[in-house]
Amino acid sequence: MSGFAAQGVIERVLRNGLTLLKIPRDMWDALEETKKGISTFSVAFPHLDLRRVRTPSTALVAAGEGKKASMHLGLLTSVAAVTTLQSRARLDRVSPIVPATVRETAEAFGTKRMRNLFLGLVSAEAACRAVSRGLAKTYLELLNSREGNKFILEVIADRLAFPKLITNARVMQRDAVWLALKAFGVTRDLEPKELFLAKAETALNTLRCAEDAAIEHDARWIEGWKLTKSDVTGRAVFEKEGEKLEVITANKRPLEELFGVDLIYLNEPLGSIAMVQYKMMEPLDSSENENDEEDDEEHEGEREWVVPIDRQFLDELERMAKFADRRGGDRAPYRLNDGVFFLKLLKRNAKANSAGVILSLDHFNVLRNDGKLKGPRGGMRLAYSYLNGHYLRNDALVELIRSGYVGSRGSTTRDLQTLVEATLRGGRALVAAIRSRSKS
Image (cartoon, rainbow, N blue to C red):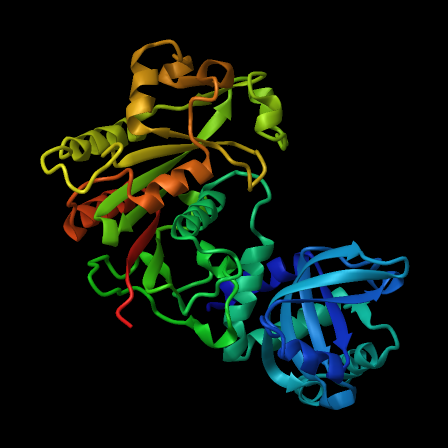
């Protein structure tokens, strides 16, 4: 990591503050024996100890007593009252760091002043203490100077910077990853068997996994794929009931700069390919673009949204039409519909976990060609009242993809590769999910 990039990571981590949490050794040992171990856990502290803690923020965990306490870094994701006197703090992505103990950390500080500030913080009576910005900055710079800490700092910085509203491809890529996992039946509790991350800027870094499954690795080459070396940012492998799912994220540029996201799902056992293309919807009245955190269902029929149909979108529709022309021929295996393409339309500045609207490409073309939804500047005006519930949500699409009731017939990896290359050339991010039989 360059000095400039490193400084950016430290500033992002500092933005929400650094909090020291002290956990007794017997409690820490008990946490290590739980199902998720120390990577993800919750603990209770007195309300007063947590009153000034911001969430999400970075947590520095000292496990044990005195100078032998071991040091860990993670995310403090939430704080909530659970009893009259106590609040629960939830932590995620907790990892050991170097220097590994309080004693080693104190010895690593370059000045006596910082060393004394750190030791005073750790020896204070309160179980939770906010770390002053000056000490936090010096400590994070110390951590970042040790090679083993850099990746966890990048992941924490990336998670803290993740937008709460739908504003760009970062949110859409995370949605595409979780849509792919749901189509395989993966819950948030199932840990990947392998997780390779070429860099932190991929939605795969939000996955929870055992420490030995998370490997900082150059994941830019994957067997059976011919992507150029700069494209793949991460790969996660899940195994479940004799089947394997590989989820791959790829993009050539930072996610903030990309136009959108494509999800390509290859259901190998059932021989189908389905593709979901993400598009951002703009409010018809631009004044509604500020802080639109309303729930989709609550305001259906009250607002109208525009799907911009620009030159890039027209090119994408033309590419999809050429691929769609390959449908037909062999009638096995059975499909309710052998269409490959679906569009997932998300409202700009809606909540990052909002459902969105999913239309098949055929349905989208019918709506566009009948002229009833014609919008400004060649766009398509989308009115919930006109759709009258005639669209898909995530769960319905997931069941269709998982069962093989939609998608292509007899398509090959070569067909998939054509779509991958076209996607990356078009300035988009890619999430590819490949379901296959497990060899084990």
